[in-house]
Amino acid sequence: MPIFAVGCGAGFSGDRTDAAAPVVQTLIEWGGPAAIIFENLAERTLASHQLTKRINSQLGYEPLLELELEPILADCLLNQITIVGNFGAANPEGAAKVIQALAKRLGLPSPRIAIVVGDSLAGEAANVLLHQHLGEQFDQVNFVCANAYQGAREIADAILAGAQIVVTGRVADPSLTLGPAMAYFCWSNDNWNALAGATMAGHLLECGAQVTGGYFADPGLKDVPEIHNIGFPIAEIEFDGSCIITKANNTGGLVNARTVKEQLLYELHDPAAYITPDVVADITSATVTEIAPNRVRLSGVIGHPRTNTLKTNIFFDGGWFGEGEISYAGPNAAGRARLAMEILQKRLGPIMKLRFDLIGLSSIFGDDDNALLSSAIKNPVRSEAHDVRLRVAGQHQDLKIIDLLLREVTALWTGGPAGGGGVRIAKRQRLSTQSCLIERKQLPAAFYFLPNE
Amino acid sequence: MTTISLYELAHARTGDKGNCANISLIAYQPEDYEWLVEQVTVDRVAAQFAHRKPTKVVRYLLPKLGAMNFVLDGALDGGVNDSLNLDMHGKALSFHLLAMQIASK
Image 1: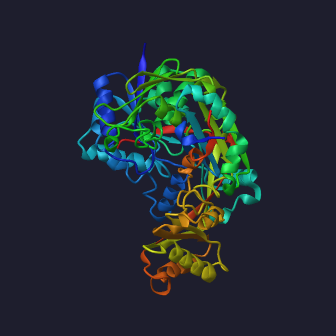
Image 2: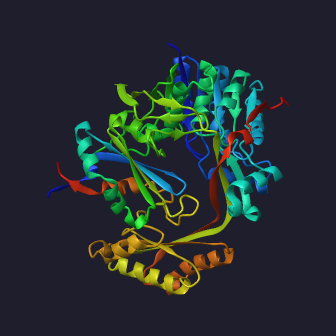
Image 3: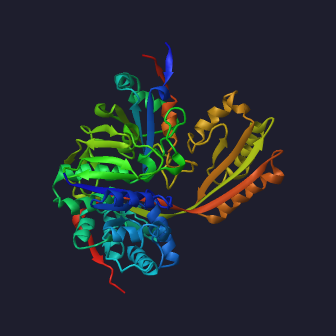
């Protein structure tokens, strides 16, 4: 039975750059047809790269691109392992040129690099389209970028046309895996069950280590061997879209029914209708079976026809975010941290909404209205904590107000409670977001090859 | 009534899309699944996360996987772009669900 293997080399922008090499070595040792994917675009990442591109039009692609590809580029080209990545981000052609230059620097023949376009909505026609869909919520003055989630078809077509590397901007994460599988198996656009199966294989791969024991380990209860050397996943995809999930040889980590089930449901809403640009996948009849150590089979995924629309994320400048922290320890630490909190609330509360955390009592479970924190403070046991770090955070359109917030945290050193130390402050530009569904016929995708130098 | 922590019977993972969190809840032992379905209702989960003010809580059942999927709309203070939380994704929220006490079988 023919198998097509897809390995994962990265699961987010900034992932470990030594993870891909063992995956590629494993694919080479296996010897069958294979691809490796790099998933570098979380919801907000692309807009952040767009801000970078505003400052330098040569940038805007994944900043770790060269570090990601240098360890594996020669081996992939030599062994016909197709590389597919959304590391193009806000500048796919820029990324393709970087890869071309990298190949040259490594003394490799110039690779055939395809660039998938059609995700970015820019220009006057795009403004009209976005205004139609968002109405008054389309704030043209603060508009940063809009990107539709494109699908696997153009990736597959680029590979069928001879691409060794496919660079994309925004495509749905599972489409990175589905594209090369579609090309290998020659699946048509309406082979729904196969597309759905391979889509869920892609879903399992797209976060890298999250299916091999990362975001999973809980010592004593869910132990993961050698997690410091966690191996990245590989999906062995079959002709009907079923797959076996495994991981790179000679690595740590774990693939079992638990890791696979957790990742299968990750970022999923209705399990009967997981919507991608390619298909609507239904996992309610799917089964997850351990067939050998670190080998788990997913089968029984059902596919329904794709929708007529593409999800589009639209980002706007959202002013500024600022946060600051200061620590108190020893007797009455919590009392002193609370006093510092009250000082900030009295001085800044009238001009901005503040979120507080008392790290050590209550922090990340809480809400931006401080309701959970207020009840934690009233709990006599927890409020006696002897090592407490106050955190305050706020947002404002005006950078001057954010700078004032940061100065007020710093001023707690001299003007706040006793023994306060370890002030840290930070600020960053905020991006606000909207999303909408746009008819796919209005957003055609395409691919082209980067010309050889 | 004796109670047991959900943490002892199930494992969980949070994901986020925009201002919406989903939390999977997966039985360690298949024989506990029906009990979990009976105990971990939409109302119980909505109460556990009341301070997050979700606008809607939906539960999906996946008996073949021994799993449930809870979708909490509007529970992330605006989500990754808007939240002031250290954990703007809500990654830790699965453990707030697992901290829930349910009746022992």
